[in-house]
Image (tube, rainbow, N blue to C red; front, side):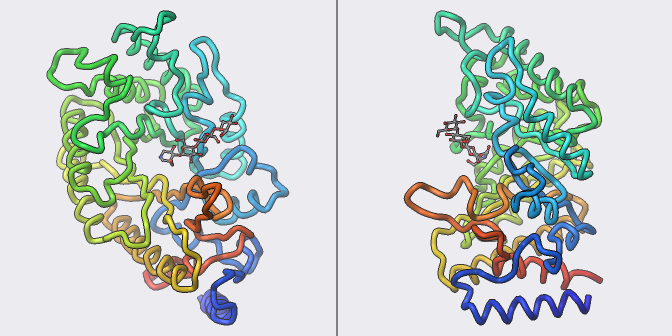
Amino acid sequence: MKRFISLLLVALMLMSLSGCSGNKVICAYEEETPSLYEQFEQWFGVGAAINSWNLDGSSEQYKTITKHFNVFVYENESKPDATHPSEDRYNFANVDKFVEFGEQTGATLRGHTLLWHSQCPDWFFFDSNGNYVAPEVLLERIDEHVTTIVSRYAGKIDTWDVVNEVISDGAGLRDSHWYNVVGDYDGDGDKYDYIEQAFRSARAADPDARLIINDYNMEWSESKTISMYLAVKQMLSEGVPIDGVGLQMHIGPDLDVAKLRSNIEILLKLRDINPDFVIEVTEMDMNMTGSTKEDFEKQAAKYAEMFQLFIDLAEEGVLDTVVFWGFYDGASWLNKSDADNYPMLFDREFMTKPAFWSVLEVAENNKK
Ligand code: G3I
């Protein structure tokens, strides 16, 4: 505790000396930097999206991720285009490497994702003439794809984003090949059938894996949150094994946290049907193109507000996982060729940013 506070003071002093503009505070992977996940261990796991090239044990990336995170997910390499590029061909090499890394480190592993409208090859949906396949053909392919992957990693990948981004930005379900081909196959009046198949196959392939329905914009959009709530409510009432909703949490420094909290309350009504239903934070980052001292201070304050909410949710027993989408500013999907972004807690040179220290302060303040 004393050590932590003196570290914090040194960091704050350095920050004020450097004016935060370069964020050259303290190296993220060096011994004197407190470990992010260790500070939050009593509430939730803290994770990062990584890529197989981060797994070289001598790299700065490797040292940073193993020090600060205890939950991992692949950013792209466990998506359908990577794992199952053609009907008769699976690529397991990269995911096998990920699982080996998980076994070495004892980390919790997430699988992202079994079904998505993006990064998914066309062979799933089309015959050799370019026409949609019959619904039963796609349902069979979903079953085969999900069963093969989930059973291979049963007991090793703890949580699956079974389906990703299936809710429309308007209302109801997203218009996708999955949705169009399968439709209301069972004739019960809803078109959740392809999602139901994916969840049922996943549960059968690994009864112990946590099965998540993952999506974006529920952080601020009440209508999207209600669409998610209604879809999951219907599926849960039909016995579809959905264990939780993943909130991607791609946010900005102006997010209204009270609104986020009220959207989460909507989703938590699903606990009336499944008392163990959870919320996960699955892809957090904070989109920021400015890099002034004020920008970093604003970012630090919003990250602190977010982590206070996460602690509150953890103490209410509804959240045990917070995952970042990346881990340092130098490698985020938010960087564009003509504009750098600054979304993470570590900068381009693996130095801690003000936001790192602000979330650690939240942990410290909540320790009893
Ligand atoms: O693999 C090809 C490579 O062969 C090619 O040479 C290169 C040329 O651009 O592209 C490579 O593919 C890129 C792929 O990432 C792997 O690096 C794609 O262009 C690029 O579009 C793709 O972006 C990913 C994006 O999902 C795709 O929609 C991002 O890295 C990844 O961070 C992002 O992740 C998504 C989550 O899965 C779902 N939620 C939103 C999140 C952010 O968009």
